[in-house]
Image (cartoon, rainbow, N blue to C red; front, side, top):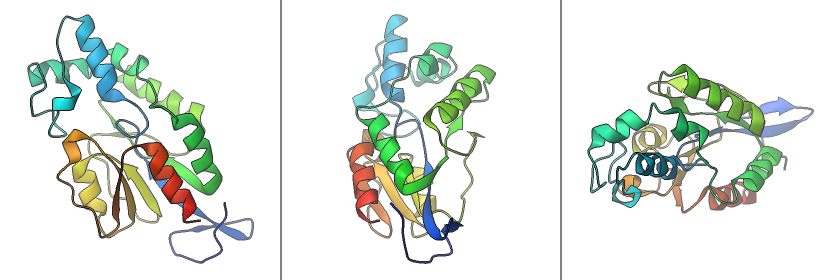
Length: 194
């Protein structure tokens, strides 16, 4: 739960040091591809999440990429998005081992921003959302992320817990990057290092 080593990345908390971590939402704790698939299917559009080969929806996805991009502005995609299995318990465990900060970006849509701000509050973490590209932040001990470009920007800067997806298969592990099948597995690994 508490670390006893000193690091410039940690902050002082009641006489002991507590680690700080950044947490992305979509593809890490929230099944956005599943929600996209459900929303598109209700519009009669076939979408294949397993065919997504790049973060910008290239691959054998079963439909025109523009349909997916258009769907990213639908309220139903965000209102209906679900946590992956085991996320709630793992979030609680992570919060017992670190200060957790939101590190998620959204489309510039007021409804989407409101839904995600409520999620930050509901799960009891700190921080706020980013619109557009997420900045590289220093002073954190770990990042839980799925986006290949973001992961690469953190290579060698902090521990990166890469959540495995078809679109990030080309990311090489090492130099601070570890790959995990699920957020649950990544949290177990992070907490075992306390």
